[in-house]
Image (tube, each protein chain N blue to C red):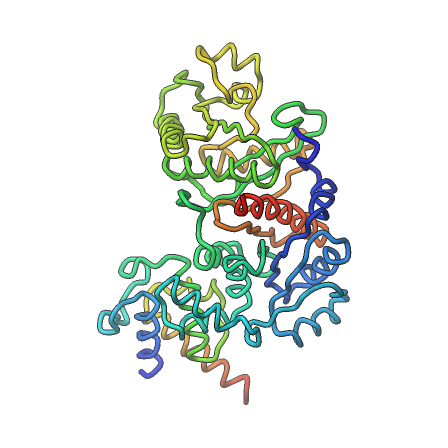
Length: 84
Length: 341
């Protein structure tokens, strides 16, 4: 839940919305009218927040905030697994 | 065409050497980029800036056998300009300093912004990162030129033995970015292509808006799109020498133009910039001319942005990259002259 909350707050910051407007089902394109330039900002903030590396293609595969949060969780799990 | 208007890679290199420009290369992960950086520095074609952690860049250079003598390595995280850039970006976009710092720690973003603040003259990427990422970063960090709503690209087509265009050299646009631009966007592509012709090649652009119709010879929604684009371009860019809709032969061949057009045209029969109605037409055309007529196709070269920027093909060789840096450097020379004029 903490990951999802942080992702929502990051999305809110990039798209200049209140965090209360962002839910797991918020669609990047349909609801937030995301352009590719927004994705560059989102990647930078997510990488900074979670200390993971994210490619442009990886992010664009996630159409909702919830999907993005799950993606980050997988990234964190991979990072933890590779550090063991 | 003047003697100073380059159309071969060697001519571009010669022109670039007269005033080497500061070209940012943010992809230190790629061996070709590091090798090309060393070559352009050694040959005086440009003043390359490779962006990245200095230790990693030097280690990569050693691993790839790249000589970085004369190449400046800029590490965003330790750059004395970092906070200045953070402040610049925050004020320009209204974003938080936190977001700006997160963005500008990354070489691509920092490198692109260098051209906006005036610490570099041009930027080139696309060897390591995808075109989508190159264009997205350009949209965010650099932005489009005034009056231009959409990025596009062009090929410089040089056909040996041809007299069309500028002694066989023509600009074909847009052959790689926009699948089916609306009339308003097509008008902006025309204007951007004219700017490219002027800034990179020193031409007086004569822009033909291509179609399968010449001045109403055919009637179809596809023709109407080009007619509308031509009208919009003429209204929005009144100094542009542009005409349409024109078939390709009417655009290029004086005898065909005089036969098909009932009124004088400053473009028909003497076009040097060909604007295709969609990506199908543009992409097919440049490949056919390249293969069937033996033309050299330089590009695709991004256009429409407020600074000179190039998007490399992922399959580019070191030689291609050096040539592209030379072309970008020449474009940046004229850009600098225009800004200081």
